[in-house]
Image 1: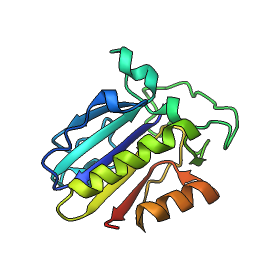
Image 2: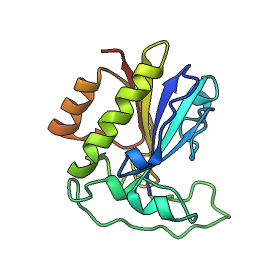
Image 3: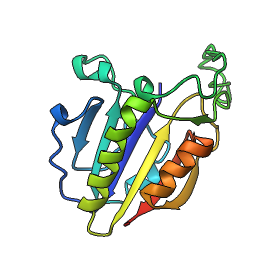
Image 4: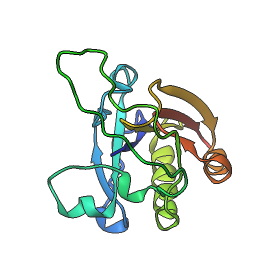
Length: 171
């Protein structure tokens, strides 16, 4: 399942309340991802990270992931779960099976609100929106997408790319 996160650069806190959102959120005052794809970049940053999960993550301690807010019909396909071989360091881990995604319509307003709050709370007016998904592209990517409007234009017209860190700036 994908990790979906927003980082508000140099923010000291967003004061988010779970009750204000349909999706699940975790706010932390150090930008450490739940997964490691962008670890080297994030460890050099200060700010607040929001981990975004499906509504099912509000009521469980068994994991936190964003699969519940993804429209899996946007890029349908069967996922092959590889069998892990600990003796083979270059073993197939399952990458390159899904490349793009969109959010379910019912969560877009919450995502928009989180992007806006994060951007407004960043003294630099800079945020990162990132995903980390085992079955996404093997090679991560960083893209400057500039504004929240540009983010939604990309989302609506062609979808967003898994395993990508989108850099957004003030409006």
